[in-house]
Image 1 (cartoon, rainbow, N blue to C red):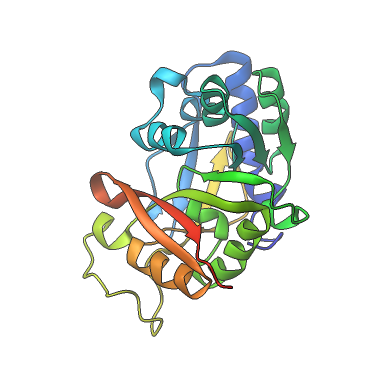
Image 2 (image 1 turned 135 degrees about the horizontal axis):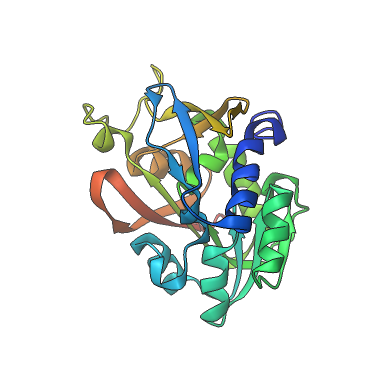
Length: 246
């Protein structure tokens, strides 16, 4: 992901929506447009979900997390708070400053503003968690190798990455590829645009990647990929670990 792909011009509608929800609650929704047209509105309450409202993928990620956890794209801290309650040391990384301030008000102990690509390599974290289609943080499929390098720079020896996505071939009932051969446009490379209160943000890329293609791309970068949870309509959670390349 590059700075121009997902900056304030893109996320401003979502930032305003989460501030509105924090103030008054209720049915605050963000309009989401994609290549396929207007999608179902996104309910902002989902970002504020309680421990009882966590999804199966959330709960699996919390269970599998160990050591010091970096919650990448933490939103307003729903999963970070669950990790804290489970006794994990957590740093909650989020690009939207409005969300970072909300996390602090919601009791997240170590909220951090920024993108993982902009952090200095630290190799400090035992688990990196990327949820709510965490693969989308790469931007596009072609940018996935550089994104994985950024993840590697933060991962302690023996650490793991827990990242979810949705298989576009299953979700949209397309003919599967074994894996994507790179000779045509990848169907999971989409473009999204958000709107709230009549104000529309700038378009930004949104990647959905099938597990076979993830395994292939990540394998060339020195990662092992294991699918640890499968859900309906192509949803899955993957665990990535670095191979011994010495």
